[in-house]
Length: 304
Image 1 (cartoon, rainbow, N blue to C red):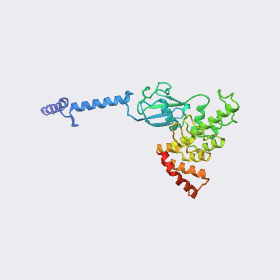
Image 2: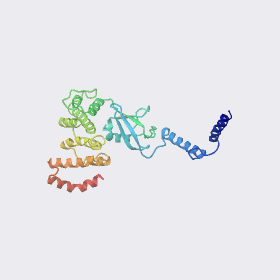
Image 3: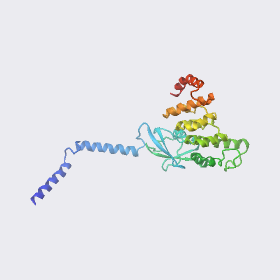
Image 4: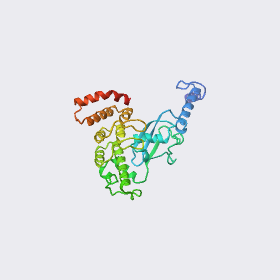
């Protein structure tokens, strides 16, 4: 009995020691451990609750509602406007800016002029991207994302199409031509971004304009380069796409490829471009090598 009492007293002493001032097993004094724990808790709450706490640059994830695809947008800032985020998504998600509709939590549609801070968007948040549900754009985008020519052919991408929407049912002549040409361009833009080589060829053969531009001045070659879709770059170049076209930010397809760390794509695009211009299929052709030699210095200057 006395042995059990002595053991119990010893245990009580251990418990009591943890409650009295002294050093805990970790080696830090209780006051320091408490301060450190309090600071970590405060920083953790700030990171998840306060829109004012954020690193200078951070990443966001954007989910395309209609397909479930997830895209990562790097180098975001709390003072970044929704419009600026859409400009990034035009390139990273391959959805033209005029078709984008962004939402965050239950705050409704995000307005272009507002900042991420205004909507309490925090680092690592997921923003919803939807397609404007009018004039049949949603159906066209879904078909282009899938890259199915048979579905695209039924959605008003050519002048002889029987497809009509409430908006286009009365279009005739030039107005109808512009409407179908715009749809063919958007389909080509998205297919090139997703890497659907056969769909890209089909659309080009149908008459889709590879020199057409999105509201941000980007061509299908811009988005193909951004994603490193080398298989789609070749047919675009064969139909007249240019590596020198600049978007509204002054970026060419090659400069975008290099900025996004796709040097192989940039080099292959440059090589294919000069093969197309020279009319040769042999990259060892002397004339081609001479052209590459003469232009390599200017290429390096413009793309750095």
